[in-house]
Image (cartoon, rainbow, N blue to C red; front, side):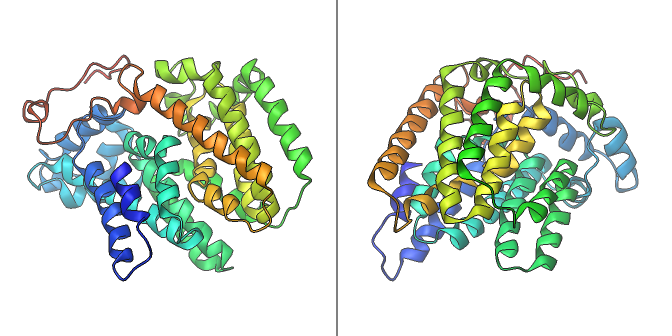
Length: 368
């Protein structure tokens, strides 16, 4: 992280662009060579590895959908192309990782081209990069949705819809993001938004809205079986929800939404929806991940807020204090058991565990 930030923070010079690209190449590289990082890594690996043993005739969408509960066309296409490459799972993980980092880079380059260092810092301390390592399919969908906002800002609805469709084919849950098209011109009172976030935090902690949304999403035909059980969470998530860390997250999203709304109410609406879903998600895995589709914009929202010409010094100081708080939260989470999404210890495909296909113990390991 620090080296990538250093590369992006070098004085603007002839090779500055190359340094920034090198920083993102490093991010892509460490994402590609990771091994056994993420709650779902082992189940993905087993799926990719077993399909690599199928003949071309046996490779079909029905098998993937019925026996592995993976229904998105992008995954099937990746398996179809790379299933017979040596070390097939690494190729598939690699493609997902490279595309995810690429679209994150394109998003940052559009919204905050002079603040890559800060955006990469937020990418880490917000846990976003570790979440993409865990999600795989949803990670790619999230990055595509982020990138789609550049077209919406340019009023290029055609390309926005194309990005939305590609994201949908990566993970069906991304269809929810179509909501941003209808909220882009809505302007609300900032104080009202902040009050709603605070109220939602209180109701979320008490579990009122968490249970309600859990029941609603359990009715969805595709996700009911996988996400209706609210207990399907890691210890870190359950601990975090009722902790001081979650309160810090609520304050972070609330202040960021409030300040972003002054600069661009369309972007403020996106952060507001994400903050609202996060506060109300309870222990429902699907809702909390959908919330990330919106809150992931924080990687460019922070530079946008701090670069406002008319931002008051007290507001700027508050933002810096909150960034420090988020950094402390980030470091604390890294030290918790296996870190954020199993990133500690960081293992690569060059390790002995990879050679032996030895996976770490997972509490919710699937039985194959």
